[in-house]
Length: 430
Image (cartoon, rainbow, N blue to C red; front, side, top):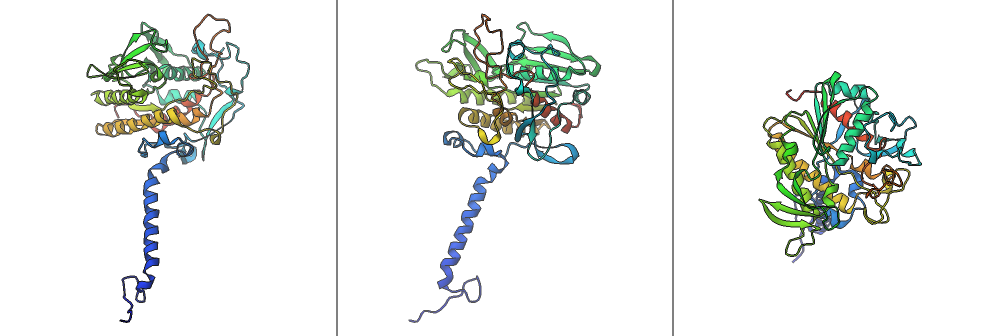
């Protein structure tokens, strides 16, 4: 029987002998579409998260577009202010350790003999636009009649002290309250009716020190991962802006409790207790902290998540000789987020997005103060051994976690001012 051409719906003269070509075209198109769909969620992420990352870290996450940070800057242009490079700024610093009394000794690097000063002479340059240097008079007008709370550990307090020093070119605040331990303080700028406070809560949730001489001699903590830390959750109703942060305390030994029952631990070295690793406690702590915020009936403020700030220990961990001795920033192509830092960063973003969706039901605003990439690139900005006198009888290690003042952490307040300007200076009741 003679072969007869068969018409198919691709054209009058299209026969079966051309079908393989069409099939390959269709398959190729499907593969292309599938690839785009698979990778589309990654398009909102900075390149440092997408390349050179370890498979163990990235494989455990579903990448969603949670990094919504395009902000208007001068001239009405928009750009991602959190992706960029550090460039030299000969005009910096804008205060010194002698002009500002708010610097904690452990971050007062110049007082205790740091020999180099170039770490103070850089500014953050976003890709595609300029980020204005902090203007203290403008900041005070934006926050006139408002209140700002830093909720977290000593790195959050580090940012608050930076803010006080930056504002000191205009005015100093008056201390109006301090807790018994001296870890939480409230300040008031009388002329501007502006209040700023830090609430010390290194684990964000209810926590108790179980053993001061725990496995790493830094204290073993019981964390009640589903219980609010009322030292701050009962006090933030009144605040217009709340900046929540945390991270480094979760590296310590911890016992995890839920429903008042021991469910696991991190670095606890206990038999018959499941080692859930630090990521478990970290995720649950942020989930509970955000739940606390969303559950407050009278809270109408804007909640900022200040993302994880990487440490820069080299040649050993923090208590085994690790140090940070570099004297200039990395370029963006010289370092990348990976392993533990990437896992912690992604955990924060995932919990933030979930909380944001829940908060939207009540009209609450959540904003991402994404300092991670910028600070990953600043191994030169830590106190190292210059947080105390060389011969001081203290049990401190090289500090590659906190930031010298003045120093790169001042840029966090450049970010903050830009974000508050985007909020339009609206009151908490509007």
